[in-house]
Length: 396
Image (cartoon, rainbow, N blue to C red; front, side, top):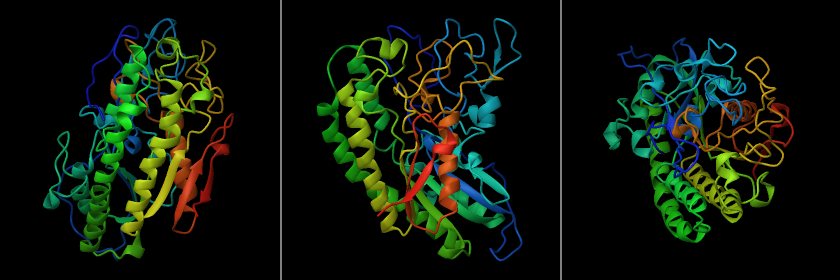
């Protein structure tokens, strides 16, 4: 949701969180070709930060006494390390997209998935809303210097044989980042739970956003049809959002300031339960309805990080025993980036997004989804297990 790239100190700050992000196709005119031509096959991701790969820089979380090194093996942007320090270059993970803040990571869902295509193209961009996906002809808007994502899709569909389009969008339209920012602020200042103040506006926003999501899916269908594709030539998938927090009773830390300074999860138990059990479920229900209305498939990833949420009792942070060569194993790690408040621990917009492990989990979900007949499915992780614990079940 936020695109600010300002860094914060860990203690004595108001917590601000970034929740979105997605990417784009390189500019340049491409020759059109019919879908019947022998062209490279492609899978495409579109939307916001949860599918662009925001937070892919991190493989787990850690709070070492110094952040000048590899952060106990969690910082994938660290290189040329000696005994005390490293160089850090986030573009090693996000590539050129780090320059404009789209933050498409090398381990994003579309890149992590095992798919029978020649190439994967990430058009998603961190911070994108539905208007940044819609084509310009339908009121779509450029974002971070990039054309609307459906216009980029039109170029790609003429060049390649697109077999899969997976979309994650609506979180920024809903101001979910702003909601969590309020909850984090209230916890940090001791103002009490935020649910009562935030739920009414969120409910209203969810109702208002559903037609916008449907418009995105309809524009994708229309663009693909204009390029000569039948609906049966490709799979169009809309997915939900994973819960960043466990239920309130499953936190490692008590409701003290350590949830910010050590855990990076500054939220009350009741608000965490609300977010886990109510908010992500309401958003998922809206997205499933939008998918059904437009004849798209639906992938529910609410529990794709189950047991590995930030501060979950069944997960842990990395320790000094971990390193880039031997990082904390996925089975033990948190798969969500904690609230970034360390002086050099990345950027704000990475907070509360699936990290490298969480993105690998989403990639596993998409791999399993591809192997199934078209439909609606839910993906679930298992506490104390890595990717081997990912399961996919049909939704009734």
